[in-house]
Image (cartoon, rainbow, N blue to C red):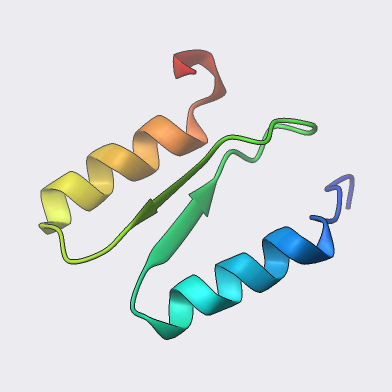
Length: 59
């Protein structure tokens, strides 16, 4: 499972964002702290932002 655990403060912030209807997408690259948080956007924009967050070569 080589994935590192997020700090507690980031996990709490993600949970709080989820409670108000926001979605957080993080880069899966080990050690990369890039994340994108969004709410109330079109499916196309969600797909674009997810691609940006998960493609480590783009950030």
